[in-house]
Image (cartoon, rainbow, N blue to C red; front, side, top):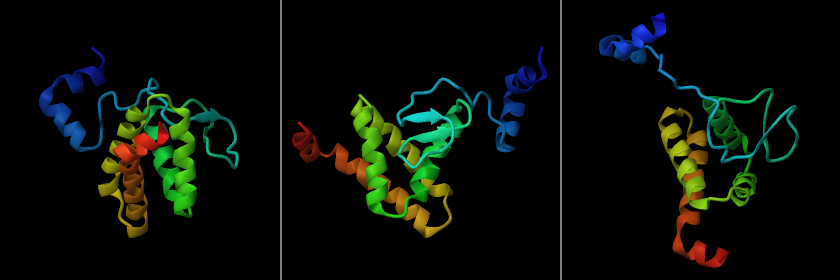
Length: 137
């Protein structure tokens, strides 16, 4: 039996390894691309760029990093609107973004970054509101 499989098949060892930062099957290439991305050199647009196909953790980190690099609320809203409009299932997009931002929030130490993610959560809530749905048709 492969060592990794043996280690993670034992509950005590699996919990110990998880405590030390090791997770079973955390990274995977099959994920839903809620935000559009391209493979290649970064360009001054709203796409996410990667050198090669990202895994789910790299992809999610890139979304958060892009949001935290935004210099203004306008820039952040434009980025979010670009991806929101392009994705077909609006409800799923909002759910993904809400939980991505919500789970990242406690890990941030500086106030400015926390405020940016709170702004993202506010954006999500404003798009979930019934009044916004009526306006969008």
